[in-house]
Image (tube, rainbow, N blue to C red):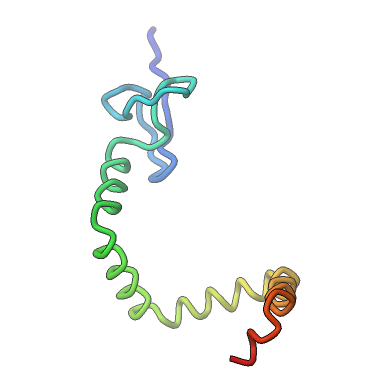
Length: 101
């Protein structure tokens, strides 16, 4: 029985047969296939072709999800207090007038 190897797309997480039907070719890789499926590769290329549309989507999402973003930032800061303090120390050291603006 001929079992075809499977490959997981690194963006969408879906599992496909590791064939050219589902993945583009790329040099330098062991299996010779891109890590992302064709659908995700096309979607990513479309986004980079129209960066203003992507920025506008991000702005709108930020407005629509303001409280969700704030809570996410609060959660990150509480989990990374020492890292945040070190970053603030570094900014003050690099630019003593930073907070006085």
